[in-house]
Length: 109
Image 1 (cartoon, rainbow, N blue to C red):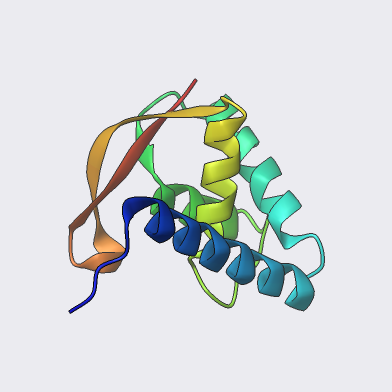
Image 2 (image 1 turned 90 degrees about the vertical axis):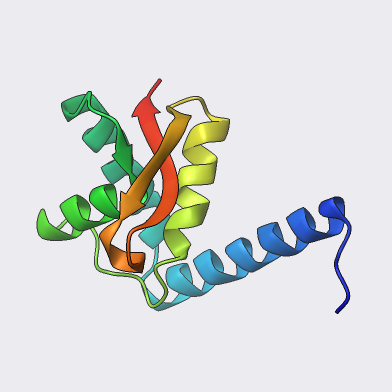
């Protein structure tokens, strides 16, 4: 089995995230902008730690965004928000959507 150097793996991950969000925006124009705005609103209203699936579920239930063709499109939204210091990583939480696998836990910055 061949393993990628860490830099190559990160680059591959980032390219995959970009491809998924580009496709989400192609299917639903400006999906990523509406998702990002939804995350900003969520952070304004919620001061408790959260994982991505909680934001995703809230935004979809509020009718702010439609589910993207691939839930990984939210990865782009979260990465952008962290880069812009809207949110920060604080640990790990368990995700119902992936059999209680640990996922990054976020807090509003």
